[in-house]
Length: 109
Image 1 (tube, helix red, strand yellow):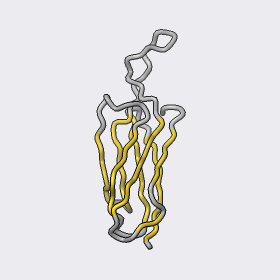
Image 2 (tube, one colour; image 1 turned 90 degrees about the vertical axis):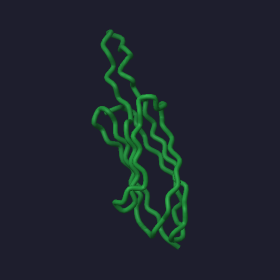
Image 3 (cartoon, helix red, strand yellow; image 1 turned 90 degrees about the horizontal axis):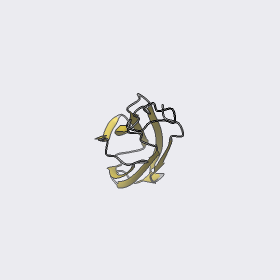
């Protein structure tokens, strides 16, 4: 598991049913390529976010496969339709097996 990883998610706290909202996510992650050497000359293990998944109440909103060319601290901005009140769940999958998660609830007005 990479150290110092922090997730950030921004979306409205409330919306109307059927409204399209904008969601912004960012994960602070170094994205280690596996090509660098540590001070003792040993390869630093690869640690790259290779998948991002957002669901709403168990239904997939967006599922991205990410290649090794992704930048450090990847930022995603996308839109989703709010069918009703519920919880958005976000997951970032790391090559080292770690899964970083966050969630946000939204109410319908």
